[in-house]
Image 1 (tube, rainbow, N blue to C red):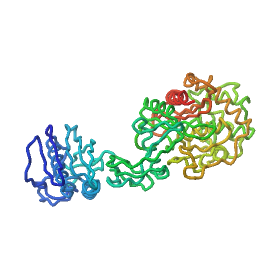
Image 2 (cartoon, rainbow, N blue to C red; image 1 turned 180 degrees about the horizontal axis):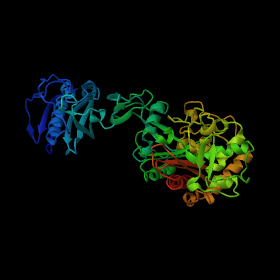
Image 3 (cartoon, one colour; image 1 turned 30 degrees about the horizontal axis):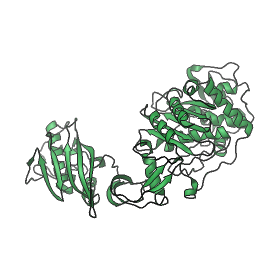
Length: 544
């Protein structure tokens, strides 16, 4: 692509300028044959070119595609891709549905077969126009049957956030804008708190009208999923935003945003034990899937909070009771071991909990006389799997009823147990107070939605022992280093979860300080205290 090349769309009458020189009349299909799907008619003697596309082919193919797109000729442009059936409607919609009336597309230098470009456009709707700019890229590939260089079609060719099945639309917004506030009335914006982007979009979709706002005119990405909110890209005419107060805390949220950025993939959630109010939610990467509230992964030894509660409730163990912690333990043919095969001679349940001994918990499974005991404890006491209505889409965890070796794996947070940071923060909050309070991000009185309630609370003697075991973990156990900087009445539990095909385990950590509980997971972070621990500690320091 020539340096400084520009493709200009002007008022629906299109022309192409490269280096300031107009192409004039140009047959976009000259020398190309037929459709871009690679099924054009060719002489049987014509040799089909193979091998990687060349620099000249990348320049030529991208130039012709951008010109056809600029000319408003969706059919011609689509034939220059390897998927004309999907490209054609998308390219047509750019003009007719997104209402782009002017655009200048400036390509950058090709990087291999990829050609990046900047779009500076104008969107016009019902007499109102607004500039719109963004960057994207295309990739040139060789057609499988024709050997021609073609644009590898993907929705991101049109806009980087466009996904399969989604579409660009300009018109009246589906929901009024909101001015989101934290529980103290401080503003929350996706610019300042990037992790809240998808959450604020979802809150707007669900509560925009209830918050008293009126819709404006916007360019949005309409999701293919009917349950997902539109993603706003450009506001042509502002409506009147409604004011929506959330349960979030700006200080805790700021700390959470900073903490997760230290890792390539990390999530953290903070919850107030006394109320269930969600105080912070952060993910890195900050855009896209809200793993902190929707993720589903094995939580490792943080699950021992639930296991210990079940064992104490059943009278099978107590915090000060001596519990065997050998290097390995076998149950129904499955062998479980401790990190580096350590053992604890003459240890107690507290010692095994604080040092995260796996085998101590496995050794007690026979005594329960009920393989499904852990699943029942998770559901009936900790509210796991009770259809939480937090105010946005979330997963409320899962502990399926299992038998034999699979049931044993659940005792230490492996196997079929599925959790996210929200679930583990809630489990810690329940352990702290003894009573499950379903996490919420907006007050239930806003829409009268049902709030999940557990069948029963923990007996006080169980909650007291469980909380004290977490205090010991933070004081001298595996959570000591991470929690050293956290003040107040504090407790913790660490976890490492092995993942198939992943060389390093996921790092899990959950803890409390005064009336705040938080949990974090760092993908491939190793031991719980090493990676996820400092994330949790940072949020607890800021919010408690």
